[in-house]
Image 1 (cartoon, rainbow, N blue to C red):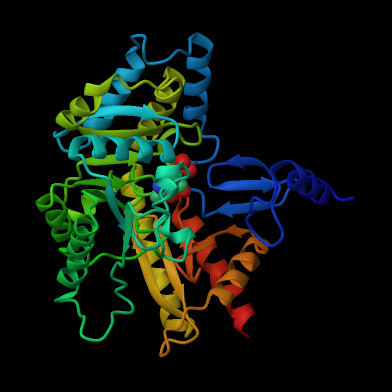
Image 2: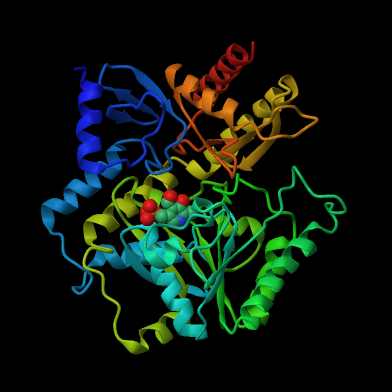
Length: 427
Ligand SMILES: Cc1ncc(COP(=O)(O)O)c(C=O)c1O
């Protein structure tokens, strides 16, 4: 039996039917920078992993983790300089009002805690999410996962609202009225909660609108949406698991919308693979939440995790990585526009910074989603040594978000391979 078949069989017995990436699953054994290697020594350009943010096995991060681990690892009920220095460094990059940090271990846990803070501060229970969302795996958070249930929420305390798809605006909707029309849907959802006797609590969106298909929100939409939420006494959680730490070209995802959320939550890239996540909120919301008792988390914010987080910020600063995101991101957008012009099956170019997508369609005229071609393409790309994936309700949007050390040379390799692979598939 081949090594892959052996692993597949053991995995199925042990982990059950949990899904795997790619039709021919990969057995990766080594990573360095933007590259990963499989067990046969084949090298792949990693254009999908937003967790090894500053590169796989970055030496600064690895050293920081090892050095702290050699000294002590304790929890946040003891005083520790690194925990405080890291938290202070994080909030220094945010609006002054966002000054309280809770450290946790995963994006799910962060959203769960954020929802508890919102409930306690508003007395409400009803949450608005998008109608193709994913925010994690605990019970409360998975109820928000409309993307796993064909757009439907998991409980009566959640409403999934439609977001604008600027590539396919319905008749009568245009750039000028789209923000108001879609923000009004949020107001409608708040009114529905009221009619059902459920007190409205708040709204949560992913700052990249990634599972929704990497959607671009029209100017003014987020501001109007937040106004309706706040007028109704609700709070806004910006889920920045995907959009923070420079990914979209600014330190924080919400900064592209000129809004200040009540709570932001972070995860994935924060420790470059070491599990650390956070909830950052305003002092008054944190204080009210803690009236019922102190919040404690055994592993969240331990010095080793904070040392990893600190090292990520060090590398980002030293290597000017947000500038790199903007420079290489603009170059990629330009080359993606060329592909858009070349191929009838590419309908739209999406994204910002180093988070970008291509909407694959049956034709530019029909704009019909082509999830089948997308599926073939991501598998063929993996065979050709480039790792990307898909997203969106019809899995028809190519999703690309490499480590933010991605260079123009890496971009050329990605885009040349994409061009070659696509032309081979549609021949
Ligand atoms: C937007 C968003 N929020 C939350 C989560 C959950 O994070 P975790 O898997 O760390 O619990 C994810 C994970 O993919 C996510 O994409």
